Image (cartoon, rainbow, N blue to C red; front, side, top):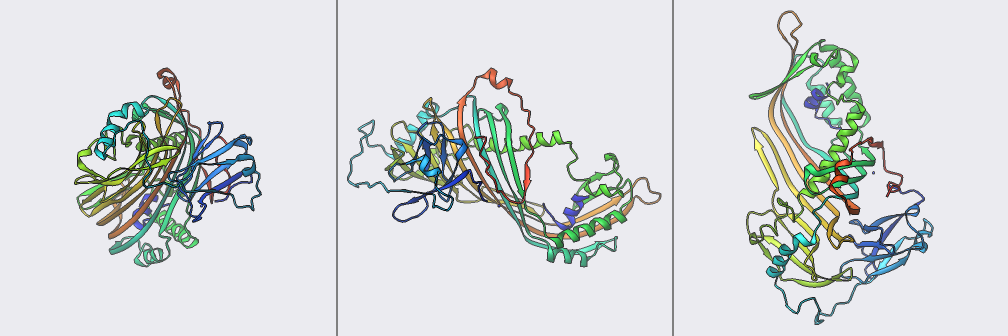
Length: 490
């Protein structure tokens, strides 16, 4: 019955670190501003991290050799090294900050590249396209991945008019009480650690979830009380073996309770529309959902056949700024901004290695809605999609996606007349038993924040890939907040 409740009432279902973890912040030594998206690597060359949008990254004591040195590299700053033993043994009360200095760049400085040619932006873009197949990995690989998704929704507007009900207890006053007390913002956060196998093709990808956890926002006590009251009302008024028809205009859908072998007047029947799959199937479904999330990231990379960012594949549709030169991680980098002439949806900035013309970073944002839909009173608008991508070089001198961050915004809504009709073919007389009808005007906003970090990427052969079994035995641990370290396995 929960889906009925959803249609009537529109219900929908954060951190400290453990003592073995240090959260390090990277700041500008002069301005004290946080430096986001810096690359952090270790003297043993086995670990790499990237600071988040607040300049922070995590270190776990049990994970590293304290004799190592960590190096911080970011565009426009001198590379900085820090003794890991000293850093990790500071007291928690100490400020765990790494200060880095800006790299002075003389405007008249002469940069020496592998060519004495001064490239235009068009020539650089041509070289990028020419070298795609040499610079990036397309083969089957095993990756260690951290993936995080934070979804926040808010009911921006709800209006119900023309309300009619044959169940007297379900009345305008009940709905008004629910509407005035119901928590209008909700969402969840999910983090997973996994091994991801395959290439960029959806049919050639497998996943093994190692660990997962989730935070669910909870409704307040008043909402819970109202929900329980509504369940009780439905429990007392809906007959055994009933089925429901949801009708909106010319569309209708039937929900047949009797075919599910549940008694609609039994207390447990109110959970009919919840997932009834067993635990093993739930684990498989969770893994497939996360695999699909990660696949969507890989499938849209700029060097794939059907990318979301088309500034290379459809370069004639874009304007490009004149290239600027700077240093990033010891490499001389071209910085070029792109902006669509027409039709294309994204503007942004690319960072290109001057030696091999590999794109090592992309910043992007949409300039108009990525997707719009409106039909018969139902509409959707994906009005925001922005983010960053970083590419790192592996031991084979090929580049792979090492960090991805994305923020996406949606607005969904409906302006429609709905009827929910209870029918019962086993009841003598008319099949129609009860009916609730109303006109709904609803608008919901949703913000998705996704982050993915790839710790390791190594090649595997076809036989090894085919022998990998997707035996996922993990469901998220549901928590009120994230209060423990999540990185031990990595």
